[in-house]
Image (tube, rainbow, N blue to C red; front, side, top):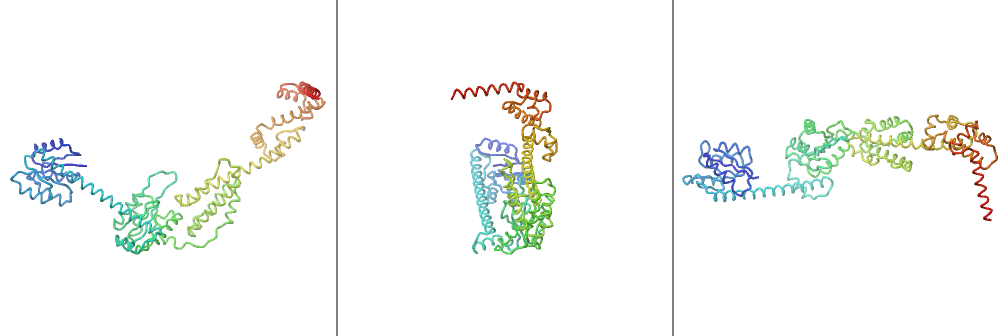
Length: 523
């Protein structure tokens, strides 16, 4: 970006200079004009100007006074001075104030172009150098931050590096805390991370010299001035409606203690899952937690006894009791982690038993491996309960399927043994101790045809064998396969076979005779 400001009390000179600049092959963005130094100063305060072309002698505020004001206000801008021969002494004064050159009136086109090009080249060079310096400075800061982060996480560093790094921020490292900011995230609620916003808020609270960012991902970790009230940052975040839980270590003196502070802040971070209502968790909040415990395996086994039953409410109740906050908050966070691992192991054991019967259905075990993959312990317990209830449903359906198979096999055996007797659906359902309607639906679903149709096919199959292989009369065959009415038997036989029983017998006998003759000829 290159903006120029023309300052002259005579309009025709301003217009002429503007016209000449517009004709030059220069990469200019904007050309501003002012009638005196006062107007020019207002424009310089409001806009980014790189070059001012100004007359020396003007009413209200001349060019030299304008240069002096911009210098006092630290407005960085270059000047080209326009003067007459009689104003040469003023031009020399302008040069001493930092003007890049002067042009004599009347201004010649080639002199203006050469002077402007010279100044603009200097501006571009300075801008390039500034960008390079910023880049180098940013790279250096990133390198320092990386080395600090590695040292914080346990990398070995020599005394010289520790001393040199500590001297870069001696006041901070003399008395600091580590602060971890865990952004609150809700499942199925998309949104951009506000880690940069939280970092900016921290610098506002502690000042640039009272805050150093050591890590941005996966969680923001800062070294902050320990003399500032630990509640100041959480309060500022709350006021700006930034959802974050803060973990803050005890004060530490000296950079050598950074690894210990890191271990402490990570432990506080893990415990923050047990205390979601605390916006800022401090070492005093976990000082009294018990370090010794026995996992409640008997209660776990009791819970899994309900798997495969209709009592899903009991499963939910047992989970709530095992993971009650008053229980979890008695112990170090390791207790909760071990309890969760024990639950996952038992889930996997139960899943292995019925996996061959689950088809493409599976449990989502990966979502239960790490409680810290969830926004909070409540979300983890909810995910655990969901998987347990899914396992319960799979087991229940598996057991029902197994039991139904046994019942159906018994029902079919009973039909084949008693087809010749008066038999109906109620009698068979009673035999296998199943509800009439339930058995009817189960039979049709698994056998592929209704009970009456299946019984009819069994009786007709027996009747066809008797007609083909014996000399019993049709009325006798009808009674032998369970039909009380001769007419009912012949009607049913005709509907299924497309012929009368007597015609079927004749056909089967002719077929047997042909087969017998064929065997005699073969001999």
